[in-house]
Length: 220
Image (cartoon, rainbow, N blue to C red; front, side):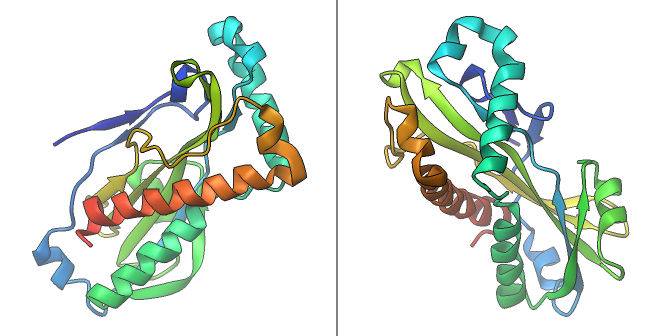
């Protein structure tokens, strides 16, 4: 099994610890058992939205608290929402449409990543639990790409058996840039007009993320 580990994006974006993504496709035998089963959704607390400015590069690890603080300030000021909810909606629709799962109303939330904590936070009656977490996101400056800024995003999704608390399917998106990213050496290009460009780019990165999760986790 290929393990993907998200710790620090471009050596600077701050995460809530390190997250290991172990892609595992939903087995056909288990997929067939989802028909008519209640699936609850849990959204995990997102990692810190990080921003790496040019002035932060010489600081190295010492600049991490500053990057975290300025990233969270920008996220709140521009009302940049966590995309995990939208990813969960798309995956839930796929589970319902392709496998006949019954998606329960309401959503749970937890700051923890352990399956037992996720199951405990799930809507009552969940036979299976779909959890989604934003594990890395922000605006990073990449010296190896002409010192240009670009928006980054990594998510992790898991389908958990509520009875055994076993992860039966998992997917994530940690693929390298594909050239579709908007890049600019001007920080203001991303933050002007209430961070419109960040939101546009984030939506594009999330769409690409969903593509890899549904492929690797659901085989769709």
